[in-house]
Image 1 (cartoon, rainbow, N blue to C red):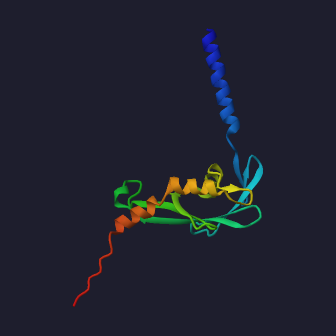
Image 2 (cartoon, rainbow, N blue to C red):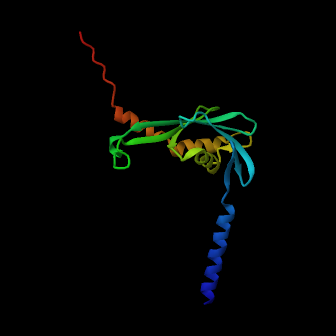
Image 3 (cartoon, rainbow, N blue to C red):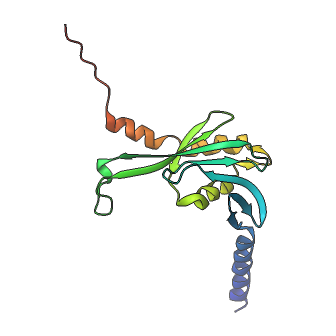
Length: 158
């Protein structure tokens, strides 16, 4: 019985610790807030496209996320009859570094990715977090798109 009580107490403390560490990410208009404290600014560039700009609190543009899509015949199913693949091309404006991520749901989804990956630090991009983010995500979508488009063949007739 003593063993079970100790185990229950241990699990409860681990659970409370994990909940205490989870950050609450909210949007107040365009301001990203983490646990109620302003973290950065995110703006959707157009109502028609999924393009976003992430800025530091001083208003300096740091990251541009551009909505992209292509058709992949291997992804065709009843819920996706065209095999449409949607993703965001992420460009870090100071370094020019790029990668691609699965299209998140809306502005809050983009804000969550920026916060959870620690991409902003003070009034700049955290370069170590940027390198890690690019390494993890790569360019798998544009690589796949290039494979589907095939090699370019130029025929020259004499």
